[in-house]
Length: 483
Image 1: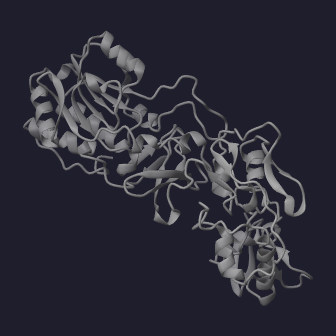
Image 2: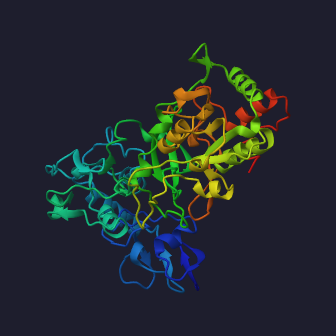
Image 3: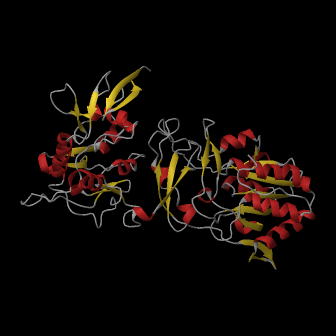
């Protein structure tokens, strides 16, 4: 695309033809404040916060809906521009309640941020503020505080233009205007949680996150959603080895700015129902033991068996590194060709043409690369080593074929655990580095947000310890060394 040269605040910049002034300024580190503009939505131009001066233009222009032109000279920091921004802020804050001490948007609220940058003057409003309804359940875990809304309409445009469902609208006029659903209807589209992310002022908040944690206590780790094979890019927001929320991270090739609610709310398995210590069968019952004792016990069991009759069952939810390490262990240490995989199977899986895929496994693509077979093809195995659980159908297949589970490497408690001789706790996706290959063969990095819970060990550490206990040499287990 052709380049256009213009000048912004005295700096010459070349940008692609068709770029608006907010994005052009962003490329040279100049922030033009805005509320209603969002790069993933159609332009509305209603908040007027992005007004800038353009030489030879008779009056200020909104930067969001003004495209760059050759030779254009733009000023974003003149006294007139600053006065206009202060006036817009004063207008927006006339009826806005002082909810900051209790509002969950505190710490990431543009009203707060822009007030400190562009306003900082006492209110001249002496009349009674307009009071509106608070804590309205819109549906899909989205809560509305009408008083905080500045009617930027980002949420309306998202539902209509991105989610494809016209569920929100403005009602009333003037200072009584408010966001609302249609009478008798609820917000119910499968991407509704994104309206919380894009609300600039805290009018829309997540019922799941409200009052759980102040945002400035949260650490943010880039990662990838494991809810389906799309692999939407996300940020994991966590504190004290606990996830409080997932939000989408921009990737133009995978998910743009968005993620579905299924993935957004699908992190609770990291916080709850975890396997925290190794267990082995001792005196007819499962007992907790140390990492070393469990590895030695499993190795002693393997020594008594014909390794070629031991099946290994990988899982389409694990990383490329873990899958490769487990597969190499199967081939080089156990020397078995009985290599299979299991996967998450969901009845009537959700899918659409936006982001959601029917395959609820984040890494089926790498399983396919390894040419593993489904458990339904398992035949002559005498025992199985299972990585990260079994689907209900695969568990039934093992039971029908009377194939005992020698060991299971698991992060969460599941139906198969009581049937294993050894249970080896492993980390979730949030507790390790690695890569996942999505449905379109895009390989994406996940990063460790916090240390593994309890005495969970990386799968590579377990496999190295077992290999050494079998009297063989093992390479050091590094998450990225095997991929």
